[in-house]
Image (cartoon, helix red, strand yellow):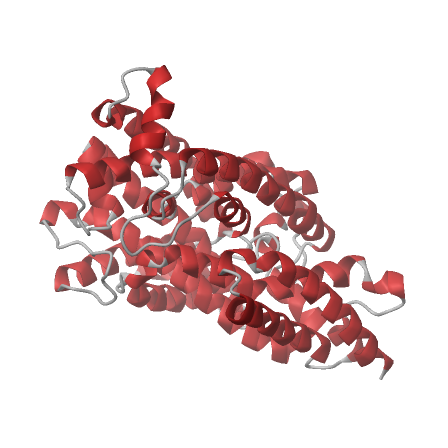
Length: 462
């Protein structure tokens, strides 16, 4: 009983400064962000996204050049957009948005935001579960599966979800420590696994790698039923797969702890280790799996890694799933907790973890990950544009920033109009012109900026 009281007391003592600026003595140095970004982005999604590039028929040259340029743009977005605003304001996205948009808008946004984060975390719990189920000879999800196909899958998902939720409940410090321990080991497993299987693909020396990559791994020919990905698909996906975090400003919640805005460049450890090396490595593993399984429909990162390098690969999949799910659950908990600051963050995270684990039971979260990642970034992007303009431009053109707080309004209609008009524009661009979801974020951001400035002038003049 005493131990239970001690645990509850410890959880209650966790202070994430949800409704105030981060105190100077709580700011963190480079190492915390290097570890967090490396751990989060060298993670479970990499075991899904890398193979999906193979399935969508990306060519070797398109993959390499697209990833290099797209990841550079992503790092610049984190540093010059998100980190600068995070260090300037020192508050979470949710608290800052409440001052700008009002608590009525924030309520709706936070629910949408938390739901999207839950689904992303759920997909990573599912990825980890594919490895945990290997010793039990569990039936694995297929490319065409939408619903869980056996009880063993559900039980395994709940076991993994429980551990993930417990880690997230202890706050940013524990999430950061977990990532710092796991990240260096994971990237070594990714690299070692890819190198170990190259001879089985026909690579006999360094000189023969590129010819094998073009002819056997990234052939430029999509699998049956999959669309074709080219250079621009790769570039924009690498840039915008984390749109919600940088352009959408969700990482204000993490980077508010940074001593300097330049710490935003630490995102490079994540994207170039995870969204370059790990995507390439996991693509190599999947191409071998396709060859040796004679085109099996199984799409489960655990068995794919296990077939290549054994137990170490399976363990890496489990840890990789956790290192993405943990900070994602942490963000989702902050989003829900900001609705009612009196709620304890750890209790909210516990509830969010349960919802996420239930969602993780559905394999469709993994099979449609590319489209889902693009969609959730697109939905959250207009708010990032609003915050950028509110912080840097409104006062310069004679308007009031933090308008909801200053005016006492519960809803800043300019923000709501911006969100709705931007998403409507993107939907029409997709349906009427045929622009794919991966490319909508860039024109959508400029539309959001323009609409917010015009709507703010009209609203504030009234």
